[in-house]
Image (tube, rainbow, N blue to C red; front, top):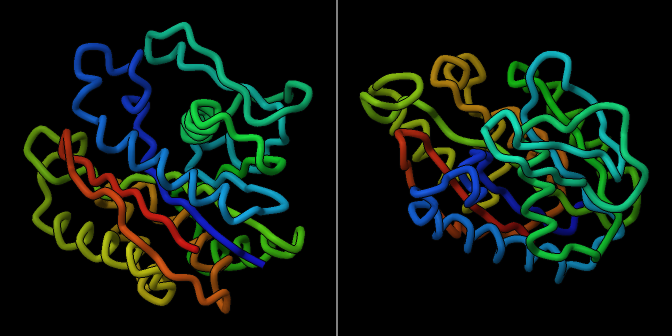
Length: 235
């Protein structure tokens, strides 16, 4: 059963060492992520699953102890996802950031496992994946990593797309309201065109939350660098 969830964005720039001189621009997002993780801890889960987008070759499960690095972003910083022996595969960037957030919060409230999902995973498979996660133990919590569109401005990674603002507004509303049906209604093809890496992880959350009757709160919404970033807490 899903008892709580936190939704966080996954730009490596959330790590101050990566952001360097621009670190202050995401202080609000970092604070909101910390608050969302505090609400996760308060739910007293038996297990925490971290779900985030992953590129080809980095899909699948990552056991506790799996490690990641921000070396690819010019920073000599390694992280570990929970306690356990180091895994054979490095964490994808989204799960490495989740591990950093958990370490920053001194997470010790439940065992942790990671799941990397393809950005192109079909909605039906996202739902079935989420449903499977909540059968793993009695009280499950999710930390869901993912960004909105990357097309909000001319300088955005995906350039300006006039559809991006409306897509992000609906995603933010759905995340803030814990609106499962609205999340499942996000168009996977449009999300791909808008480079919205959070679509699949959010729909895994929606699958896990079906029947859980959780309430949601939107803790942060902004689009620095032309990318939609949202933080939400469900409980």
